[in-house]
Image (cartoon, rainbow, N blue to C red; front, top):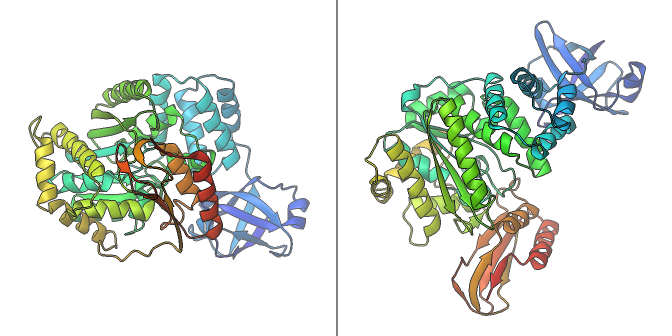
Length: 487
């Protein structure tokens, strides 16, 4: 059928279209059916919703993601065939291992929007509960790579760093700035938060743009040796970014997807030198044994793809910085780069250690001298200068004045003693309830760290929120979970 495009000036995060209920009934189109919108050689798959009195019988209302294709006013609309991936996902739910071609089919259908979010959720859940082999992790890495583009860079000079996440504290902007100042090329493509209060892309977005095309990204790298951008806008591994969006909703991060996602991102930017940060501990994302298991798998996948890969595993039982949330975490970064006295020391130490690993791995300095070089670059403020260049190239300013959240609540200690435990996962949950990562100014400020002395009525935590309701819910969650233990 031929229909007129109607813009409602809205974004759904994926291609979504709305038609009148009577028109849908006439053509036997159901809610969540897939349709192909096309004109000439242009086409896009969209998920259908229906409404009454929103569109005329000859109209189809479309989201921003469809309008970006620049279709003419009149388009052809037809039901899309059911994708083969649905049957392959059922196979995975039954615990069977998928072939290279089957995984490629699923990734291609995810990238082209042929699968709905609920279908993607079934796939993620199946991967999460099934035992996946190293072989399948490699196959998924290949499938993610083959459905995206690759950055045109000289791979012999490209280095990268990635964390499995879960622990608040933005090491990446500091590591990238140090290493780029030392002469390495660091094309950092970051994801948004999955289970934490902020991802690197969320924090960087509070100070500069993070959405760029590949040619724009290359121009930024040529100017500064580095970038700190969101991978979802680049089409380097498009299926991965759609998987991450659903993982965020499910609050799941399956091992096979974690391995494939990280390595595919590094390979898509042509990185030959890779550091993987794997914090572990009782209150971290993984235990020590799980960290060692991941390290072995990362190394074997790295060997398969012929890259120099090293894992940095360290026990971590508390947030690295003081801030938890996009703006609060980038403020910690700036304090370290500016060499301010109240900069969080744990975050600084971890950033230096990670930068040292990358500097030594690439041969920029001899083994055992990386920390000395990294600290020298920090102390001389060359890292600050480099970060300012990167932010400026991404249309931002490190001297930006941050607005405070509309509402806040200081939570005080009910007793004197020492901080004996900080439940990281609970703090992440409280920060998300307060509005992270969507509300950039929302989050938590941690006044005390492990083993620090506390007096009765000393501030322990400040919760920031843009909503009174969310602030109240965050306070209630804090009261029930008691994430900071004093003894």
